[in-house]
Image 1: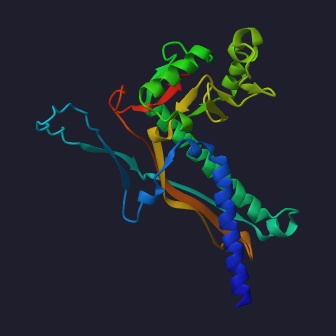
Image 2 (image 1 turned 45 degrees about the vertical axis):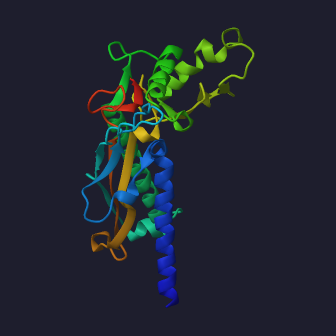
Image 3 (image 1 turned 30 degrees about the horizontal axis):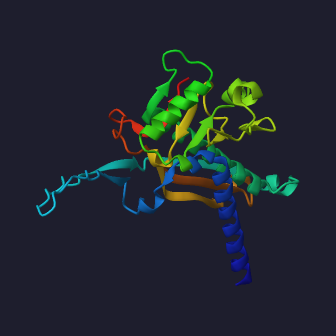
Amino acid sequence: MAANVLTQAKQDLIASLVQRELKETASLISCLTDHSNLAVKGSKQVSIPKMTSFTVGDRAFGAQGAESAALTVDVDTIALDKNKYILFGYDAADEMQSTIEYKIQAITRAAAAHGRQINDDILAELELVAGLSVNGAAPADITASNILAMREFLMANFANMASVKFVIAADQERAMLELPEFSRYDYRGVGPSPIVNGSVGSVYGIPVILNQQIKAQQAFMIAPEGCGFAFQRSPAVGEDTDLRYGVNGMQVAVDCTYGVGGLELGEGSAAAGKSPLVAMLTD
């Protein structure tokens, strides 16, 4: 009985490790809205409703008012079509002769690989649904004017600016650090600089996130309501014996099922299939 409890505790520890590692590596998840609670068993996609609003009218005193136009409801969908999988085996000698916990290290790296894949899927979706593309005709490093254009686009489409994030590539961090608007007192005055200790913390009140998976000369400004994700099955670990690797040889799988999709598509000033809450600097 005690052995079973210990085995289960170890499995729970490994599962927790996978979740933590994936969360840390899939850093772009924090920029999106989580709709995992809608990804129930039996569903192949999740539907997120979006509803129109009312127009306020005038009513003369003592007279009946006209009924407001009826609300209409539409939906955005997130297809749960990403079934990601890693399978690896290891020899018992790997565990026996290694100075590290080989299995734990291998599983940790598998979880990190899943996290990077999730980031890639998010970036592909953001590029697909961005309602504003800056520098599309002639890719170039970011300027203060580019940042303000993206910020203006989101503000004009009623983004909650308190939750907006600005995600940039490594080369664009350098470009931003070199902008006189952020680094020189004669440009920005005596107020506090957005650049502290040589790193970009925020620009114009928007937190900046550096992600090395973004293409060169590319950046995204995102309100979480503009793109969402949903895990139908969170990252999980399974293992079984594999005698091809000798006695006590093991085979391990780490997999998950999820989807990523643009939201508020075609709303505001965005074209059909585009989100008014996502703007990008085009590479």
